[in-house]
Image 1: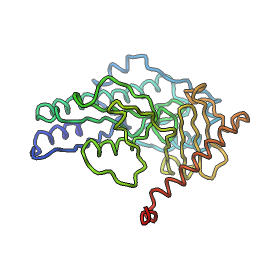
Image 2: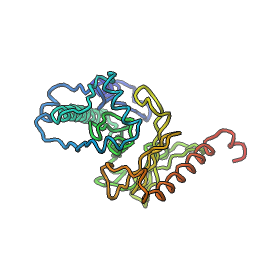
Image 3: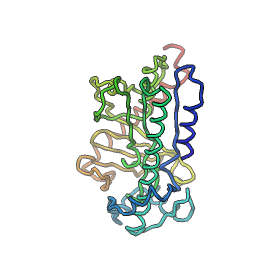
Image 4: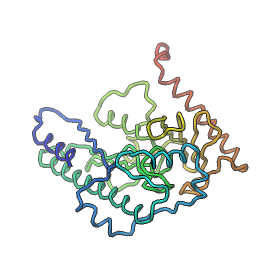
Length: 302
């Protein structure tokens, strides 16, 4: 509520002397799931989808993930009460309050758009909506982030500018969130840094031919929640996902065509070893190239 109201107030009071770039960071939907009760009432009455969590799935998860479940039942994180075996009613309530937070933010975004229009900005604006991560919301036996399941790593990305970009389109392709960065620079007529791993999404936004990335990557280092591994990295293609834990013999490998819900870990499956080796090779090359291309010591001869 505060963030949305402050954004509107800023738009109403900031001197209109030049074009603006306004970044608005809502802290939610994030624990504690604390929307005003009027937002939660309808969701508490709805039949919300809850993925089944079996003991077999939990037993097949990497040790770092199983340790997180235990850790989160022993320590209070973000006012979420973690339990080993929450009831369907408890799972439903958590999801309902999360969705209520989403609806609250949706309402505030509507007010921001209205304020842009009232202040004369909207006809010459590009509005981008995105998030940094999702929330497991008790699926796979987990809550919040720190894991590499699609429900955590896939995020919304909406670009809106009537008269500039054709609306009503869904673009199918792999990208990383940072890929919106060079697109913003190009839309603003600004220079793009030479050393940049991001690949501009502007062609996709403009409706041009765009195939997306072959692979996307996500990283997570040890912190106060992920306590039993130093570093994990995810590699995802359209059809496969690999999760690597630094210095550990275990990991995750999912055939997304046959297992889109990421239940059956094929890391130790004999028939999947060639695919695991292929993806590990891709991960190694990406890591080396990323280190090389973003290092200051290479700029002297580029």
